[in-house]
Length: 166
Picture (tube, rainbow, N blue to C red):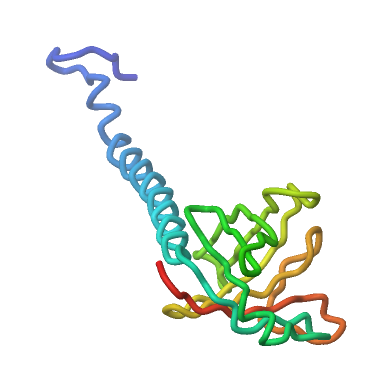
């Protein structure tokens, strides 16, 4: 076995023994670090794409659709990771959101931030095309939807929103 010495002729140094391992280890660290940075970048971009004030153009439980006259006053405003739903001047609910744009379909977790339901989380899927957003979700405690639909008995809610401003 080679002795670990440094700089003596005929002997293997620790640096020489470790050199073949360093490049793969550095590469692995860079890949793992880059993957985390990439995931963080994707999450930041997804959240940035949600910012602004949105009008709700349809909202259905599968049993009932919210009438257009009611929806006319509904707004969904996203600032950072916080969402406020309003009916005119009255706040309906405030949520903290977490997005995962790396999954297909993309996922949205909305946790109630205020009021009686504080801490309850609704699991959703979403699709964003330009300034049009489609979200399908289930009530707190239920599994995340797998498809975009709201049909009688499905227990899913589906809404479509259009961005008014960023």
